[in-house]
Image (cartoon, rainbow, N blue to C red; front, side, top):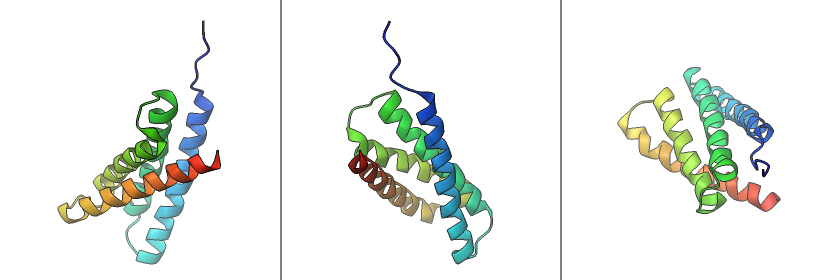
Length: 115
């Protein structure tokens, strides 16, 4: 039998990384923009969703499309989670979706360059 190529330690490391990065982003947003703590929780949840979705799509499922495109898709999913928790209003959804897709693809690109 062949060994599974997906290791759960990678999944857990990325989830913790997403938790930390989301917490930092949420703290910056709460500190400088002076919003409610719901934005902190939304950013933490979005960070975890982004990292786990990215690892699931690229390492576990090995979907086609390249890591940068899948990073963009994962960023879009994270933006939807952030929007649903923080500000479920119609006028900010497009903004959150574009930002999540761009930042997700940028992170995947920078991670790909590091390997």
